[in-house]
Image 1 (cartoon, rainbow, N blue to C red):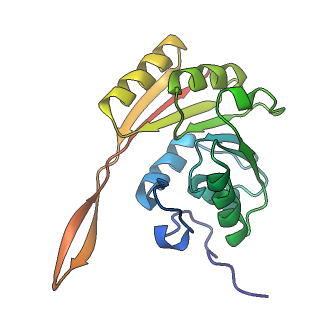
Image 2: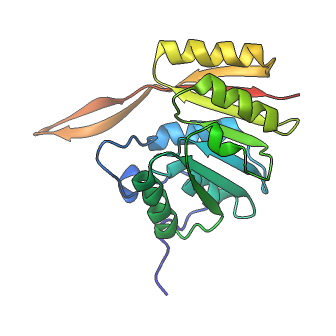
Image 3: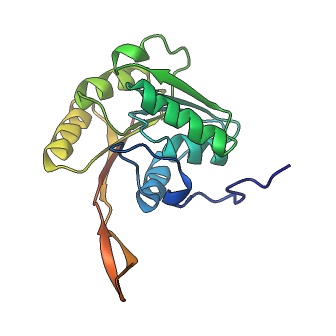
Length: 199
């Protein structure tokens, strides 16, 4: 039996260990750690990850919470296949992958989530509104964006939904990189992470 690729109990899988597709965004390791912290997961959490992309969040949570259930939603079949590839690569088997556009594809999900992570989608406000209806009491929703317009739209949606304990965090991370014969700090694209609780 071969050794697992990630044998640690802590999250923070290096980006280069994930399979990728050209042009498909990936939450960078440091940003993922912030997202995981904001979700405040329980051992048996039910998470909807909307706009799951490369599948980094489902993989990290699948390893962290093996008794939990993760539903990864992605509208592109090739990208959904990438999520499946990364789940298999890391031995994660508690992720259900749904292909479709949110919020329409969420209606036939049977289990209501206690955590929602919105990493993409054409209408974040509509997705958040529908997800909020299904979110369990005391559940948490988070959404990410790298634009000021996105931050405004998500903040406005949380206000309309009367979310409590709303927090906004912006990641600001630099990594040491070798360029030629010099080592320089290079910025990782900053990301806003907005979270709120349903009470």
